[in-house]
Length: 243
Image (cartoon, rainbow, N blue to C red; front, side, top):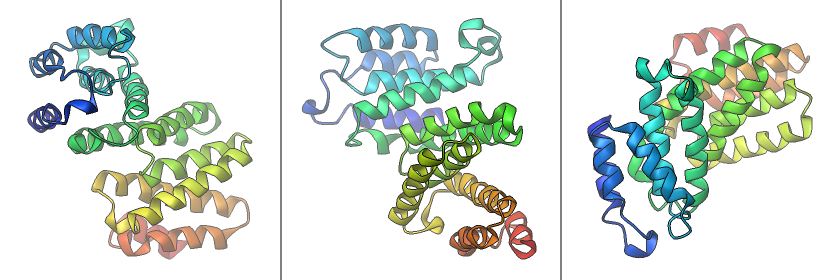
């Protein structure tokens, strides 16, 4: 992924000058050289400087560096970086708030795919723990909707977490956002693979939850939205046929 990220970063340097105040070549060089702690320190200073705190890229560099650090044992063993994966999601949210018009977002498709995969798997693991993990699951999926609101799977999982923690009103809002994201994408079949993976599991989780509430019809209706895209998947096929 590093080479692809470098291409995305380089592409950002060619954006019009009005898009940001600086090009942050210093951060690019440090990131490519895998000097992640240096990236964090320098990028953090940019986010605190009045002249640069509104620029999106420093926040993105922090998120990408934390994500890379979360995969390295020596950083995971350090107290300040033991939550680097969660912090990567938090800083991705902060980045997206600065890049609402997606001036840079699409240059980093490979990063978003990897971050989605990590965050989605982590959130699902917490969700599977039941009540004891629900708060952490909700936090992860909420973060995913923050940096990538166009991704429908996290919205559906967030709604399930909210329903499970007696936040029915918030759950309904998340369900509306889920449906909008799915419709805007033109259906599950048009989503990238990383988004399909989470959405498939989210739909099955939703159907399971609806079954426990005595509303199997609603669960079936959800599965129908994913049938065309997922019926070739053995897990989904078995679940669908036995539902």
